Length: 438
Image (cartoon, rainbow, N blue to C red; front, side, top):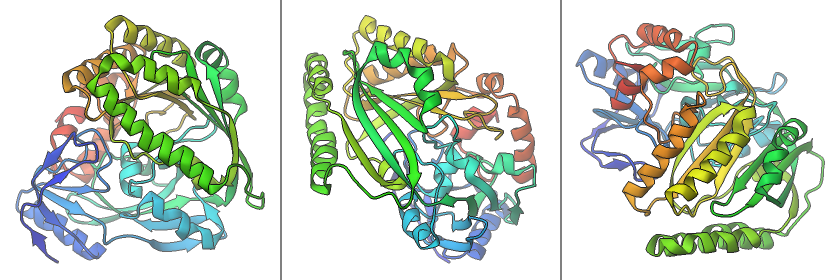
C-alpha cells in the first residue's frame, strides 16, 4: 500500500482539476485501510473513476482514491443472471466479461468510458420508456463507509435505494452486483426527420419503441432519430460494413465534426450554415449488431454538457422553448441537442425517481467562449428548472440543496442514510456540500 504526493488530475472535459494526494489500493482490504486512516486523521478521501463527469462531483478535497487495480468479475451466478464486478471496472470492459456467460447489461448510455461505480454513482442512463438508468440494474453492493468498515447491502436492504445511486457521498464502492439479461442484439434504425414532426410524434415514438432518442441540430429544423429494437442473440448482423461504419462514425461524426466545431469557434457566424449542411446531409441506415455495439457511440470531440430530466410529456414544449431562446439570444451552438426517455424508478436520488422522465442534454464545444457557454447553459437551466427539472448529477448545473429538496420527495431520506454511513463527512467535497446542504 503506497501513497504518492500531489499528482495533478483533471476531468475529461477540463472543467475541474486538482492536485491531490493519490492512493491506489490493490485489494479491498487496502481500500478499507486507506479510508480508515483518513477518518482517523481527520482527512477527506474521494474515489474517482474515469473522470468523465462534467460537474465537480468527483473532485478530491484532499486524498484521491484511484481504483484501476480493482477491476473484473468478482463472482457470477449465470442461472440467476447476476454478476458482481469490482468497482473500478470500466463499462467498455464489461461486454467481454459477460459474453462467456451469455449475458449482457439490460441498458446502457451512449458513452462507455466510465467505471461501473462512477456511472452508477452519478445516475448515468440510456434511453427507453421501459428501462431505468444503470443504477436500477444494481441488486447488491459492498461499500466502505466513513469508518473504514466494509458494509454489504443486499437486494432486500432499504439502504440499497440510496447506495445504488449515492453520489459518492456514502462511501467507496468496492464491488457491485448487477442483474443482467440474456445477451441480445439490437436493430438500429437511424433516419432524418423534421423537428415539428419529431416533436409531434414524441409520445407515440417513446411508447412504441424499445429505445428511442433523437438529436436536433440547432439553427435548423433537422433531426436524426434513432430507434433501437431488441432482437434475439441469434439474429445475424447486418447493415453497413465495418469500413463504412468507420467512415460514418469516426471520420465524419468525429474527425470532420471536430474540424467543423473548430471553424465554428473561430467564426461563430458560420455555425448556422454548418448545421444546415450537416443536418441536410443526414441519411437513413439500418444496423443489426450486439446490444453494446449499438448502444455505445464514439465521442472523440471534447465537449461540455448539461442535462436535465423533466416529466416525459413536457419534452416537446421544453425543446421548442430552448429553440426559441437560442435564436432570441443569438447563441451559436454547433453541437446537436440530445433527447431521450427513461422509466420511473424508486431510487432516492435518481433523476427518474417516481416519474417517467424525458431528458434534454445540451453541449458546447470545449473551446467555445467560456462566458457564452456559461450563459447558454444558464438559459437552458432556467427553462428546465421552471418545469421541475432534475439535473444529471455528473453534468454541469448550479442547483443547491434547497432546490433539489423541492424536486426530490425523498431527499432528506438520503441525507439520513448519509448520516449513518458517513457521519464524519470523510467523503465530502465542495460539490456535495452544495447539493446536499452541508
